[in-house]
Length: 126
Image 1 (cartoon, rainbow, N blue to C red):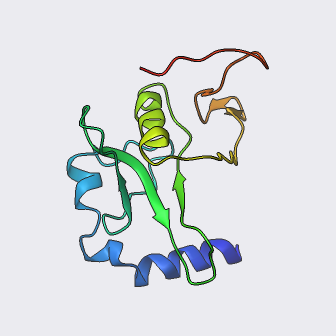
Image 2: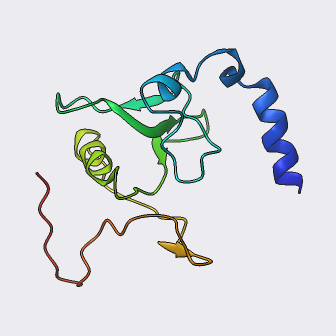
Image 3: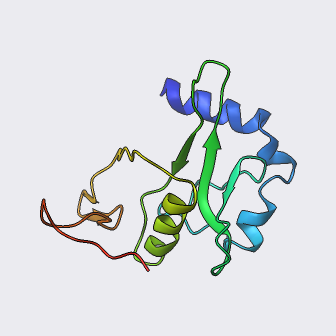
């Protein structure tokens, strides 16, 4: 429960409370995330800059003085956002992906499988 207390306290002090989530609410459909409880902050939001479709994706840059490199925190892609997920990966030159959930948890889909089913499987990104 300590984590939830910290989360609530962070939300009270966060710029999200001062209208910094406008893009997620208007463009993103308030919000297109799997859980429906996390909204992207416009101040650190990743914009997909490839000129194809919307620049919106439910993802934010994470920065800090103690970090050597900036990283991106995003939801696992859903069937309707998997193309946007891969557009972001390519546009941002992402070299590593760390997944923190299973595709299915407690019988509920958490994320679309976004990697080839076979070890040497092929994938085409258009």
